[in-house]
Length: 48
Length: 579
Image (cartoon, rainbow over all chains, first blue to last red; front, top):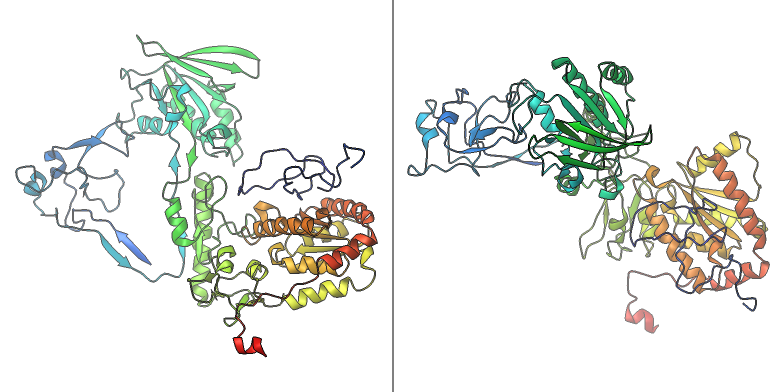
């Protein structure tokens, strides 16, 4: 989250495992809803 | 504590182990102790060193006392020790401590068909090897191969069968197999100097006292160690000799080894009754399936349930020496508990206000120590002797019915408000757990690691103590960034209370998003007591994030996250509502 990296590893619901972002090592990994854009990620659409 | 004492059907006080009963018993079954390599009767001594040294009758195998069917053992027993009417007895005992030492199960290599355990007679497991080489075994210590009862000349050992293999769901090292194989090769070299031993391994873990010396002696005795696990085993149908194909990763060549016999060095696994014991004593398990200790460094013998201690394999794979050490420690710990005559409990425990309790049982569900008892329709009750004071229940209760001694909601909220009273926009608000993150901050300090001085830390015993209300209050008070920080997953001082933190923060991220507040303003990090560097790095990163938060955003969060009227467990009387 902090670095804007989109975590793509499959996460099974209810699994008990500590995860960290491969880019910034942060543990603050949040599930993004389908279609949701991460605020820190660079915008693809210049109008967005 | 109720103990089931299983029926033996032979009175041990009368039986003198003469063995006449076994001589006349017509039933023959594979001997479990000899790994099925020899047979036993329905009435038998489980193993030569069994205490008490008396026979037992296996009723599942026995033909019964019907004279037409059998009853021969009763006829020949001069002592009249056999009693078909024996039955299981329930014994009740008052105990002050319980030591769990239920041992292990050995991995069944049937599923790893590439090694041909079920197809080839001369592929055996290390446990079967143990019986064959043992003087008390089925061959009286004469090592022969099962197919033709000839002595093998070339013997291979394959390591890590059922260990360190995530593909079959066993990623852990079984700890004992390497040295067991080293011992086996030395035994073979001692008994039969002309035998050629080849060990196929991926790593030899000889880390104990004198283990490396033993490994070197095995090599000096002529055992070849080849780094690489075989991919295939074939059998010559005529001779029943085996051919093993392996990539020698040291030389980088594909090699073929002709062997007379192959020993699979099988791993170990948690015993099958672990679930049952786990339920009886409210114990949790690690991802490997073994019992989880209270703390890996500070309480390696204690179970999370007070008065329960672990010894041996059920806690983690370990060799005899470590098992004996742990058993000694468990005995000492339980002895200290019993001799004290009283127990010391935590001063920081939770207290439930019965009148405010909504009887929902959520607190009982989240308590990692099983210290809250709750039955449907009644208020929850805290067993103070079992409560460790993590505060997970207090943070979960939506009705304000639970108060944590010394870390009350009011105290923590007052700290939040006082910390953010002046210039909150310049501050990063941090909730740090007592055992890891707070100590990590101390470590950063004593290590003279530089980081921005904008953070303000409030200590809680566990990150699970930080309720949603506390995090929201920090935003309401104008905090641009809030960090909740705790121990890493395996290190939580309160078993797994920090999983509650994760769930709570994840729920709050969704709420913040809905309220139009950037969710990344709430951060969650695991920082251990040794990670001063990480603490400083997180603070530097958060400072960058803090600078991106505008005054408008802070004001929006204040308005959007305004408190709603607190839920109450008690419905307001109609008359009161009317007035």
